[in-house]
Length: 476
Image (cartoon, rainbow, N blue to C red):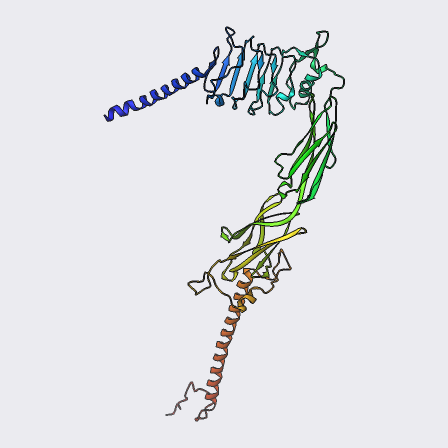
């Protein structure tokens, strides 16, 4: 049994894979239009007989449509129209080729839902006109239109403009037929009263206070007469527009702070192309502290916060109600700025139990202020097992809030020293104690020596000192 498994299991796996592949091709063939061939990602119709008379579609509600990335059609003389709903099911379509066929008309909204289209090749068809509205929403890398009998008119001037304005123009020998049925190179085509439009917004930069209202004005010009519309993106504030032939206005009411930094554009569009002019919207508003949390420990201790406000608010910290003096050991750090939003933390370097307490953040600008408070506990007091919520005597608190003279102070109006001041004071106290002890010992030793000398001078034998040697007579 084990031998069979060892030698035949891989073969069974390959067999199952092959079966599933056959099923995939079978499903694709069932959904594939007549006179075409299909795979999981491609449809190609290139047999002229019997050929197709309509754009190829898979069976209705087929899940395979969204997986199609390429459609290739060639030599289909009876295919004349691409309707609005012919291509909409192929949302993953990237390459579309219709060449050497009878295509005469493409609906304006034919590619409206095909945002992934990058390459379109319509070479040698029967197109006499083609609107830029087909393609203006697409980010095309390639559009090939060679070999079509375009009529010389303002309707195709956008093709000439497109060729002239492309960063890396590709050589396409494009022609159009004039009233005398003569081929005119599109590069030489001149049509009276047919040109790009222009748009102009009165104020390129607009600053307004939150909650106020404002009206933007735009003037346009061009022949043919352009249409006007406003591109407001994802504007949150309420807005409505009014347009006439050459003027447009946009009314924005109860302006939201969320719209600060957004761009609003006035667009003028005609057959030849479009032009736009934009205004940058700046909204001023009072600060709001949207996030403040208890300290976290990483490389340093950090009390994280997020503040919104415009103009940029000033930040002030308080410790237990008193102004916190910042230094290089306790200071505010802004890590990320997103236009009117600031993410940062109050950074503390090696805080001790003397840094425990309530920390309050105040954000302030000319439009108002906001403040929030959190309680921070870094460590317990030495010698106390349970010190999760310590109470401090007035002596300790006053000692912690004495002003310091350390350099690099970010706010000299503050009064609270950083952790290094307490450490420095402790070292100074220890030094004083050591000097006092040493001086006491030396003084005591000197006193003992003086007493011994005094006793020796006034002994009952009248000796003035110690006798080290005694003289013995030699004569006996």
